[in-house]
Each structure stands twice: as structure tokens, then as C-alpha cells.
Length: 128
Image (cartoon, rainbow, N blue to C red):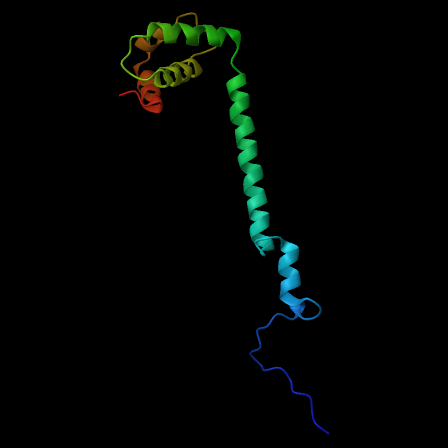
């Protein structure tokens, strides 16, 4: 009678893949990439990016009619600037965000009294 061969002491094979289908069945269940952990990470990353996009859009829609009025005035005040309109728009939106909701001065007036805010918004907008 022959004795059954026992697995080597350092056998690192993963027994959960033994049986019908083995590794191939496990990989196909994980999807085209064959990696369940990678698929989960991609799903989590996608959800995180989607949530970030929703929050960014919500802040854009959070502008009141008053905010839009002040930003449009700022755009008009800076219409002759020698930079792209998108830079001026980003700058005016940034400055409006730094101002108090109770501020009565225009962005153009307020920026003269707040040079640090002006510099920060210029840098954020890429105004050089």
C-alpha cells in the first residue's frame, strides 16, 4: 500500500482556489480585470470623485443674485485687463468669496483696502 504524499512544509498555495474552476472561476467573478480588490478601489475612487464634483457644482450654484451682481460689476470694471476673461472671472469670484455678505462696497473698492486678499486671489486666478 502506498502512503499519500503530504504537501511540502513551505507550500504557499492558496487552497481556496482548489476545486471546480479554481483561480479562473475566481478571477472571472471579479470582472474583466480579475482583481476584486482593484475593482473595489476603482468603485470607491469613482464615488469620491463624483461626490467632489457634486460639491464643487453646489458651491457654484450657491451664488446669490447679489453675488452675481457684484461679480458682474467686477468683470465690467476689469474689462480692459490684458488677461483672459476666465482669469478675471476667477479673480472676481475669489474676491467676492473673501468679502462679507454685509459688505456694501464693490469688489473694486474693497480690493484697494484689502491688498492681501487681492494678492491671494490674483495668485489663485493666475493673474500675473
